[in-house]
Picture 1 (cartoon, rainbow, N blue to C red):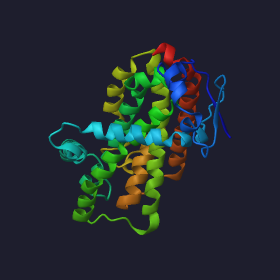
Picture 2 (cartoon, helix red, strand yellow):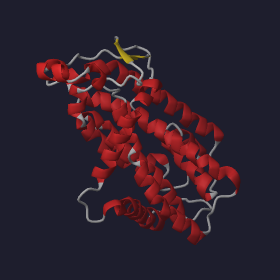
Picture 3 (tube, one colour):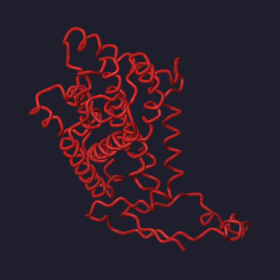
Picture 4 (cartoon, rainbow, N blue to C red):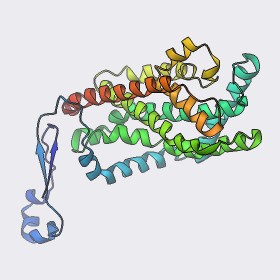
Length: 312
């Protein structure tokens, strides 16, 4: 028997079940309803814990639901579009082109020893993932209102699914960077390319912390949908997408390191382009802020979770 504990939720009944129909009760045997080989699962409803805790076992039990939500969003994302998944390549390519012309040619932003087009594209791809994931995951509870109000499942699956969906766009957009790496001969040197997934993991932790916090706040206050576009517009400048962070004054490097995406972009460039290595102390600051943000978002989300169905 598998015993799981869940936060306190409003008890709901579904009409039309076997227990509600006398005809079905008489015609269906218990052995037809329950698989004798399947382990029994008991759900214990309890008050939500004040400690920010992520129930990994429960999330694993509902993993098929997570993949269903992810696949649904991926398939709907480009449904009835003329170019389809090609937008995942065109969006970062056009964005990088504008940055190269405006900030590279006219503003002459510093790029160090790395060719500016490669530098910009290597920064645009992680940033494009972050902004897409933040926009999708922060609205995940409102976008799935019937599920939140009528069915029990771990609500953290919704922001988590919103964070995973843009990874498809990130992977599809990688050929743009590979073409520039071939053109400018900026291939990674040594085994440091193996650290690239670690910097993307830092981006996932950062955006998941933001998503948990904003999705919970958005249930009660609908200002989030207006705040996110403004935040997304200034974030590339605060993350070093248009310039090499190592080329600006050290004082500003430490100020920008408070933003975890600065460490993500600098580390990603170092891993895949053989660009200047990020300062370990600044990366440590970014990692600490990302972890603190994740636990803060999880605490707010878990404390608000029992009231989602009533408030939304």
